[in-house]
Length: 292
Picture 1: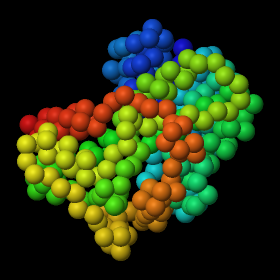
Picture 2: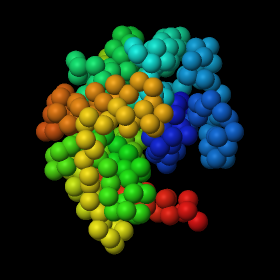
Picture 3: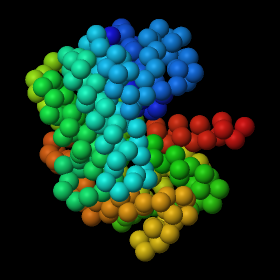
């Protein structure tokens, strides 16, 4: 049996589906058991545990063959990332107490970057969990293609999609969440020693202009990207309700300037197989179903 955190999200659910599809048993570690009914119906052992609760997490991680760790995303953290640090400390203590044979944690491209940014919280996780005397794999994933879910509405309604990834013809490392989940499940079935890093991106790198062109093809209308002026970013993010937008701005700067990159570069990264058009088609269909 494998314990999977974040199972109600896109990556966690993909990890669980791939494990179940391979005949493995899954323990769904959730904060709200009401959201895990579908997983219980598929035979999962549903275990309630808050990611800050060391005792509950220790019980959830005990007696399993491996653990998939997903740090809850926090796009508007307090300075110094205290919220993430608290969760990371709890997960580390729980893993140390339960002593599962191995763990795979979802990290990010650029986790090794020395410049502060939103992704620094994953760097902290890698460092803290990597200090445990147990096999740990840090799966560093590229920018999620599914981030384009925010682009569907403007692409459909106006044909103009704002982009913070710039320049618009720059190729960015991106990956589908299904590729991330499948790879994480495969890694959980591996045997290794110590800490290792696996870096994952999609079949090819993608420009914002290519995203617009793919939307145009799928929607049957003209679609173009429009770069959002950098000097307006803080105002835009604060208008969206953010109180500390600087880490997010720093992260976007890192992607745009190229210092958020895989440690081994593009040539050394593992490649997924799901293409952009497959992901965007799914996002468009989901958006259409929500409108009906």
